[in-house]
Image (tube, rainbow, N blue to C red):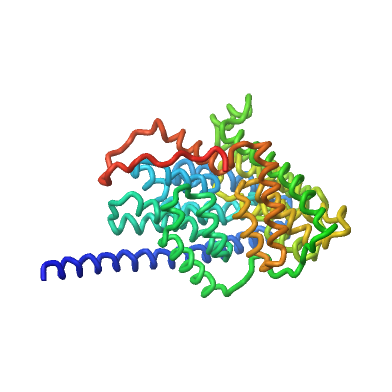
Length: 451
């Protein structure tokens, strides 16, 4: 009888944990949908302001970036940038007091508010990367509430939260799983986590229940038949790999410190530096008739569907605007702007490849540049495939993505998010270690310098 009572208590406790984790995954889906609505509202408000007068952005963008940077540095430390590097860093930290700060619900709330503010102000940022940190924070809060003492379980919840954030943000559940395997985790136990799979499914189902089963960029029927059409694969793979590799190398160098007087200005007066970055973004936005502001979703959607043809200046200026936005220190992701840059690049290349369907070249350009930036070719291929609801180009997408990845590695030897995560770890190495109630976990595997 004593054994039966003990077994019943264990079973009850296990079910309590499962239900709590499932509920947290549903919350991730709800928050991701709300975040998407807030981002859309921010874009609509910005467009209304520009319709009144585009010159207003000369004041709004510097002020918005300065305010966002000040709030980040004073009230929401750890919310800056994409959010993916923070999530990766927490999977390799041994001090859970620091993890609790990086993945606090306060930082998650600040991430939503400040990313939305950055979009209103015209920053070239996205919400998908921040959704990873937000999802990880919600699942981590669930782990704290359950008072989990097993380090692997707490890290498993963080991984599940990050994957759920991608799944709900893009409505791409398969991409969420692949992203967690390829980008976030680096151990067999984490890769096979049932918690992660369940979280991705529940958050994805929640998003679908709230907004419907939509495709991020609609539906395309383009194909890349074997033959002369495949000349687009090496063309997009090589050129996209160069562009994405250069982009990653610039951001990694900027994260380690800008050179000369510019670097001293950024370190000594970060708020004023953010305002200066905002002024540059406003000038670029006015010169481009506003197409470099925000996520770039509208432009990418139009290019992929063949509704609008943008000149080469679009992806060049969007490239510059995204670098400036990230260097300013405001919260915001790189996924959506990178997809927009890739689509613009593909649309430009398509005019030189008459033997391949223009829509197919756009998709190949998108996956090439995106894969070269994140250096996660499987994730890039699956995301683009699911976002366009097109499995007919899977083989061409994979070939282009892996080629772009190889070219990018020759330019930038370390993956972008791994390098940014290491910057977080290096910055925290000298931080005081507060006592924690959880046992000291075993040393985590090192971040990979190459994949």
